[in-house]
Image 1 (cartoon, rainbow over the protein chains, first blue to last red):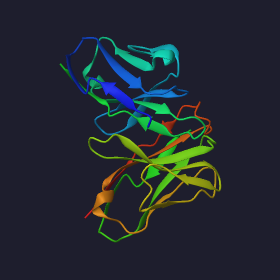
Image 2: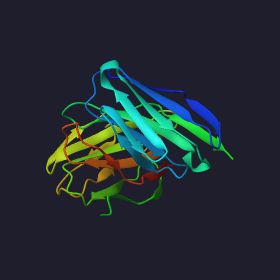
Image 3: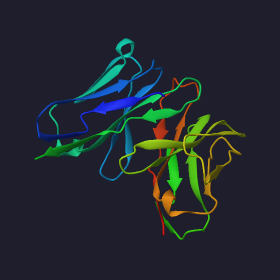
Image 4: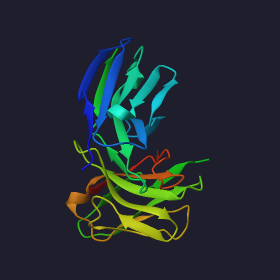
Length: 109
Length: 114
């Protein structure tokens, strides 16, 4: 079946450090999203990025659909960046999202 | 816009009880869905709907029932709650089911079945 694999599973950073999270998927993609699940459990949309590069403040994302991966960059990390980061890919014509297992990020002050 | 709203935020049930988790969106989205999130397992699709009057099963549909009588609402019914249904439930919506649209999630309902 369609696989979504995220790495690393866990990441600990000092405040101010940069990081790169990776998402590999096993099939062609027409919808790729990154979410941040904060410590209160809310799923926050970060990027809708089936291809190309987008930036939003300290965060940016790149999806290379032909090579079946997406990267999420976090620069100058802050303690409020802590939480779990999920990537999810959509399946064609059904709207279903398949989630990776997530990367748990802890940013220490 | 309020986006995707869910009620209640927390619920405790006894085994065998029934209840309905409510989900509503005010974005005129065609597509709505329900996921459950369990520790270490990510989010899994329970049921989804591509429009009013149309529903279909997802990955883990057993023990749950849905209907879609209006575009705005997509309630999830637990017919006879079991401890295995203890989880956090998320409702989501997107403009269409084409797979080319961003999905938005509600705040979640944390359900405990004793």
